[in-house]
Image (cartoon, rainbow, N blue to C red; front, side):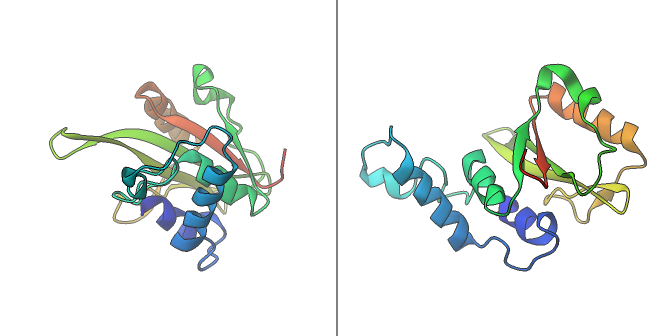
Length: 168
């Protein structure tokens, strides 16, 4: 549900219900139908779908990308070998909408390993960490602090995606 919270509350300019569970499920189902290598259905397919985990409620990157592209955005994978130094954090807010991180997390004393989505967004020149696990958004003091945060996350296995307003 964390990804849905990010979509609804922060990422698409505060548009209420920009993405609902139903619309994300529809995208996930369409991705399965359109997949030329789709797996044959089994009774476990009800819970373990290729693009949506019914137990955790999580969606994969393909759903994220399709949903954002449906809103006129493009998603660019950042080459982690370059670190954060090549990300233009000063790009116009009309161009760089935000940054999405996909992080490896361990929960329940390390027994549960999964991935977690985190969004960074610049609003009126200030970068915010909009992680749904935080009590409230946290601000970064400057671009250098954002780069340090990104480099730390990349160094710990995080994937960085740049969300652009104009399709590239």
